[in-house]
Image 1 (tube, rainbow, N blue to C red):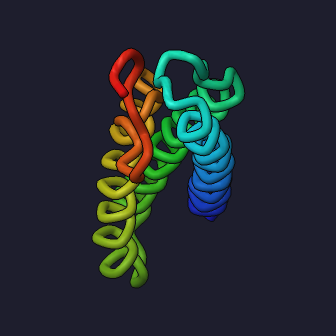
Image 2: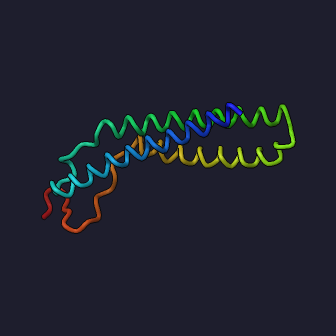
Image 3: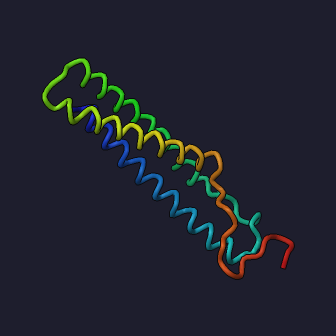
Amino acid sequence: MLAAFIAAATFGSALLAFTFAEGFLDTRRAQLLESGCRRDIPVPIAVTALNGLATGLLVATGASLICLLVLLFRYPSTRSAIAVPFTTLAFIVSALFLLGVGYETVNPDPAQPSAAGYRPCGFG
């Protein structure tokens, strides 16, 4: 039961950290539209830090879900028939989300804003 609680808490915290990071990137997108030059506004350090935190929390989520699966197989009960597929699905979802957050950590710079009025540097 503790492994399930840890998995839920770390996944929720990762979602929260990723949401805050996206909020910082929204501020950056607004600054990009104001400046009209993509290279003028650096990616905030907080975005990279929060994405890294979310990645670490998702690794902890995966580890706790694997521990939960091992415990479910080692000590089978009547709940195992429902808990094993649910835990497996939760692990797959967290692993896919981990890949997305990991990509955002490596490449946090979004594509050019698609709003009207945005012009890349030197073109205008």
